[in-house]
Image (cartoon, rainbow over all chains, first blue to last red; front, side, top):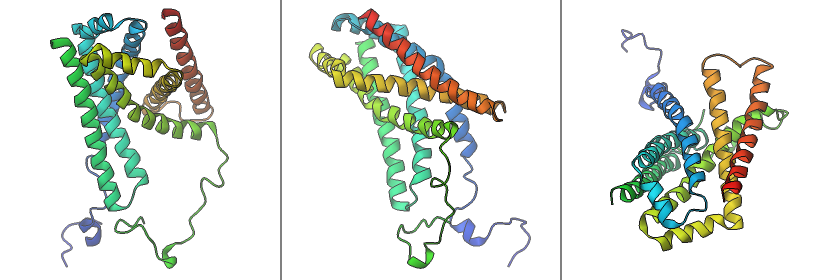
Length: 130
Length: 137
C-alpha cells in the first residue's frame, strides 16, 4: 500500500465518489448571481404585468413586443430558469437518496427547466421579431 | 450513512435516530426557512403558467383570451395571489440570505427581526401590488 499521498480518504470513499462535490462553490455563486439579477428583474416584471391589466389582445401584444420589454423578459426568463433549476437541484439532492430516483429527478429537473425556458424565450422572440 | 444502492433497509440497520422534528418547538426562523424552500418550489412549478401565457400571447387572440379567462377566473386569481405572495416572500427570504452572506444578522435578536420583517414585507408587497392591480383594472 502506498503511503506517499497524504490524503486521508479511504479507497472506498474515492471509488464511491464521496467527499467534496468540487463544483459546490460554483453552484452557490451562480445561485447568488442569478438572485442578484432577479431582484430588479422580478420587480420590473411585476410592473410589466400590472401594465397589461385590462388591455385587449392587440395592446398587450404591442407592449410585449417592444424592444425593452422583450429584452427584460428574456433576461428575467434566463436568470429565473437557471436560478430555479439550481434551487430545485438542491431540494432533490436533499430529500432523494435512492440512486435511480435521484438521477431520474435531477435529469427531469434539467429538462423541465430547459423546456420552460426555451418555450418562453421562443414566445417572446416570436412576439418581438415577427 | 445514507445507503445509495437501495432504499430498503434490513431491520438490523434501522438504527434509532436522534429526534429532530418531533422535539423542536416550531420557531419563526425555522418556519421561514422551510417556507423559503416551499415558495421556491411553488414558483418553480408556476413557471408552467407563465410559459403558457407567453406562448398564447405569441400565438393568437383566441389562445390569449383562453388563458386570460383562466387566470382571471376566481380560482385563477387565487392562484395568482398565491404566486404573487410566493414570489415576494421568496424574494424577501433571498434578501435575508444576502444579509447573512455578509455575516450580519445571524445573532439573536437580529435573526428574529429579519424573519418577522420578511413576512411583513412579503404580505405588504403582495397587498400593495394587488390593490394597485384592482385600481388599474
